[in-house]
Length: 79
Image (cartoon, rainbow, N blue to C red; front, top):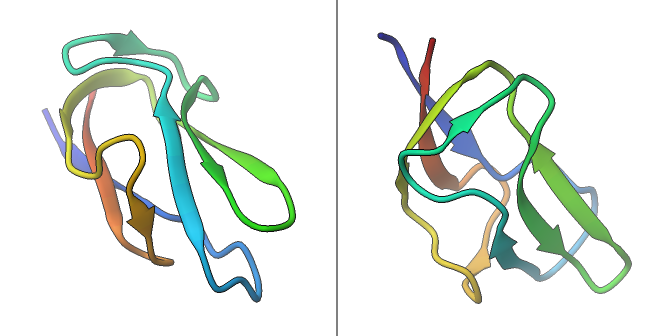
């Protein structure tokens, strides 16, 4: 199985991006397009969707953490 790094997307000009919550747990199977994590900036909330079907294998950035554009949030094993 290939492992894919889930990264913080480019959300435009924003100073602070907070990871509010994970919507799935490690070991959970996910579908392509399923929302995995919720990020929030000073302007809006943004869900991060799974680009592939697979299994969330690891969470790197926990809920409540401040993340940067391009930072690894977790890892997805593609199925």
